[in-house]
Length: 74
Image (tube, rainbow, N blue to C red; front, side):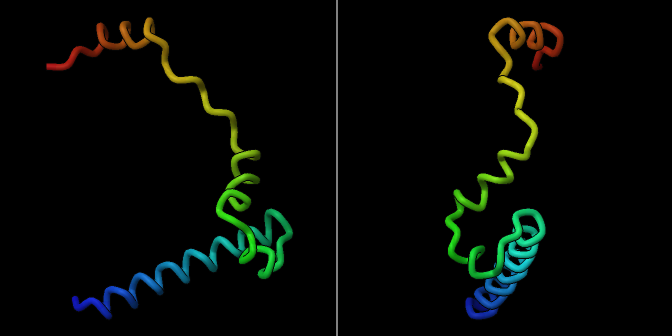
């Protein structure tokens, strides 16, 4: 595949992803297209993070040790 063909595919992939994301922003946030395109990535991500369930804390040292005992490598 030549570079121009690769660029065209990347452009098409970006355009499709941006269109889907703009549609989601419209449905979930009530944003119009101009609001979507003016938003920064952080502004676009913030509502999704606010609506996402809280992530559990990472395992502490005691839990990691127990898991290593239960599932030893090699």
